[in-house]
Image (cartoon, rainbow, N blue to C red; front, side, top):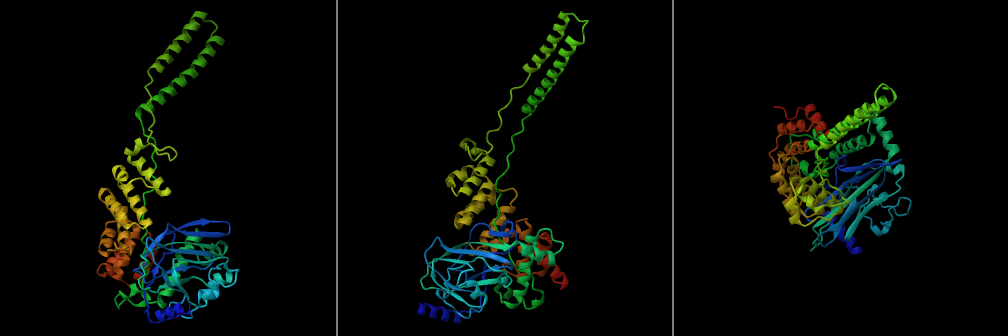
Length: 478
């Protein structure tokens, strides 16, 4: 163990400062939010993955008033080890070995609390791990207030390490009472406390840490852009699906005619009742024969109406019901799409040839997103391209292809990613284009175009913030 510790120390001494891959952007679009009586639980949507060979390290953000958090990292689709250093100090000083703090006792009430050491600036080494569990429970309020920090994990290369990808999942639980009180005090006009907290407290922290940290992306910004007006450069890349498609029963003119006839007959029967009552109880001067004829004639009219009722058409059977799958309905595109949506949830897709035979562009898109989330990027590319080719409105498939090619993987292609971003009509893609034009990443740096794209993404809070900064310092004006 001593030798391993020396290796860590030597590696950390010689490794230069570098950019850390953010595991998530803390905003409401990336998390499912569950509200309890005394807590908000934020769960990162789906499992995510990183190309471990290509990243130099990753970071994750823990906000104020966090009572509990849990980050699970495990190797995926390859063999090898996760090897590195964890700290809140980007310089990775003051090493302490995991065995010294009984690392796996993560409850704050237990002894050997790793969160205490991390907040004091200590660095925890990991040596040849197949998975990581970075977590803390029952965090007291005085410690919650010390958070709102990034935690940094720096990868230490291992000779002959074959690990390619890592998967990760994450959730945090926030103290509802303290979050609500904080927002009431600082944002009194807010109606949604948790959304305001996530979107504002995190961004405030970004602005503070940006002045302290040298970021790889900021090195690409030209020297004339002073630190005083650095924009918010968080990029948001999340794939989108069409999801379940509501399928109403088919309208049928003959069916409508049938129901109109039934209504008419029902009215005639009501009239018959009144006639019988009037005939036998009020119209006393009529003979029995005339009374009978009057009622008989009316019954004949009803009989003719019944004879003229059209044959009702059978209701459309191809409306998806997960409890009763009808393969004869696979030729119905909406039915088959909803069937695939159901199978994706079960992680039990049918054969690829069946998907191709019956699917439409919406089905291909959602299957492509499924394979992307599973880490099978080649299949994701095939299906997303099929969706893009067949779609009339190419916004969602082109957005997803841009995310695919932005992913740091064997498919990484910045030129293609930017090309597909421009074919999308989503506000979030306009925002991302604004960031890339401002930074000059994948395109020639152009503040004027950055401003134009931020204006197009006006309903994105981050775009609004960037426009405020650009207006204040007169950036991107011709």
